[in-house]
Length: 207
Image (cartoon, rainbow, N blue to C red; front, side, top):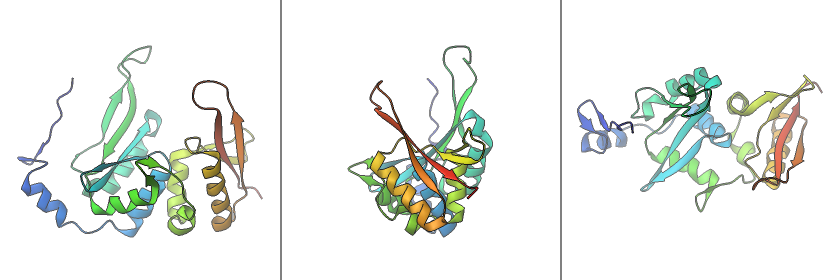
């Protein structure tokens, strides 16, 4: 098992040195706040540590450059000095990079984002999440994280299947209202496992 390094610049990350440093940091700037909200709306995860929250960013190996870009944006709020990698442990890709990730430290700025999404530690979508928090910048990051080209070659799919059908309806409605897009909800019902349906949001940019 790889040893976790909790020492930076000679001080443990829980030391008074680093805790005082965190306390003196400014709040997250508005552009980074919007990007963070968009990434949590996508597939970034959050954890509550003591009173404050942190964000963990992780993307597959095809998105390594995107993870590095995100790290450059948020490194002022990280103890990590570079992204980490998860490797395939078995199969034909054994030893190859599976994903890249990094996490922020816990901070009051991230707790405010936590409060937008989490109810009883479960990520949810509530009315107003796009209308009140996502502009063109956030939409661009959401698409870079979750978007793909539809097989028709003229539409974009946002892979939002981690949300319920009702939550996806909220997202589709708010995308249409705020950005004048033409999104609809495509529901694929499956009878395997614990996922009775797969939901994606299709956005037609041609109309």
